[in-house]
Length: 437
Image (cartoon, rainbow, N blue to C red; front, side):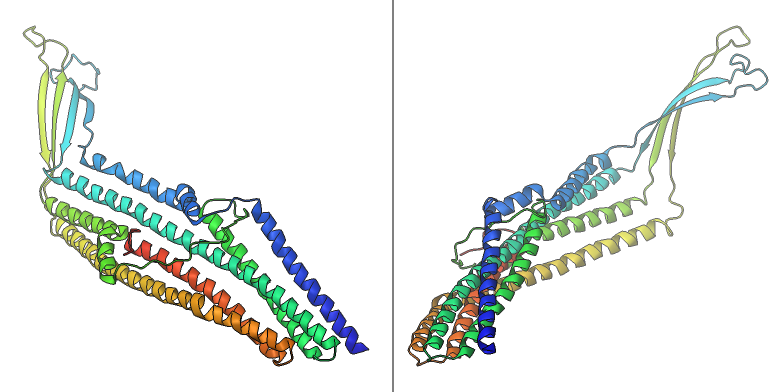
C-alpha cells in the first residue's frame, strides 16, 4: 500500500513538474512574442547605430581629425603695448625726449619644415584613430553575432528539451500500461520520471543562460537590459565554402583595420623622429615696434616717432642633453611601433587560422550530425520503442537511446552555432566579408 502511494505521488509530482516547465516556456514565449523578431542583420544594424562604445571611439577620431590644421598653423602673433623711459618725478610724456608709447607686433617662426612634420604626425594619428573606428565596428559586429548565435542555440535546446519531455511522457504511459497488465516493472516508470526531472533541471539552467545572453545583446544594442529578445525559430543552416588560407591571410594584410592603424602610428612615430632631428635648428622671432613721442625738441621742432625691427632665435647650446636625447627617444618610439606592427601581423595571422580551423571543424560536425548521427539515433529510438512495447527490449535501453538522441540534437545546434560564431570571428580577423570561394 505504501509503495503504491509513493508511486502515485511521484507520478503526480513528475506530471506537475513537466506541466510547470512547459507553462514557464510558454509564458516566456508569450512575453517574447510581444517583441519584434530580431534577425541577425537587424541586431548588427542596431548595434552599429547605437552602441555607446563605438560612438565614443568615433568622437575621439573626429577630435583627432581637427588636430593637423592646428599643428600646421603658425603660432599666434603677440601684440605688445609699452611705455618706455617715463620720468618718475613728473610722469610727463613730454619732459624727456626718449619717453615713448610703443606698440609692437611679434611673430614666432619655427624653422622651415617643423610645422609640416608636426602636421604630418597629427595626420597619421588621425588616420590611426579612423582605422580604430573600423576595427571597433568589426569587433562589435563579431560580438553581436556571437551572442546572437548563443541565444539561438539556447532556444533550440529548449525546444529539444520540450520535445523530449513529450516523448518521455509517452514512454511513461507505455510503461504504466505494461505495468498495469503485469508485463512491466515499476522501476521503468521511476526511471522515466527521473529522466523527466533531469530534463526539467536542464531547462532551468538553459533558460537562465539565455536570459544572461539576452542582457548582453541588449547592452551591445544599447537597449534596456530587461527588454525581451525574440529570435527567429529557423535560419539558413547551409555553411558556405571559404577561400584558401593563403588568400584569407593576404586579404587580412590589406583589409584589417588594426594593421592599418598600427601602420599609421608607426608613420607618426617616424615623423616625430624627423621632427626631433629638426630641433637642432633654431626657431626665430621677428617683430616691429612703433614708438610714439610727444613734446618738442630744444630747437622748437616736434619730436619724431621711432620705429624698431627685432629679430631673435634660440641657440641649441645644450644639444647633448636635450636634442640628442630627444632624437634617441623618438627613434626608440619608432622601433616600438615597428615591433608592435610585426606582432599584430602575427596575431592577425593566428586569428585567421584559428577561426578558419574552428569553422571547418564545426562545419564537419554539423554535417555529420545532420546527415548521419541524428537520423540513425531517431531510427534507433523508434526501433527500441517498438521492441519495448512487445517486450523484446528492456526499458533502460529505450531511455538511454532517447537520452542519446537528445544529446546529439543539442550537439548539432551547438556545432551550428559554433560554426557561425567562428565565421563571425573570421570576418573580423580578415577585415571584410568577402571571404567565400
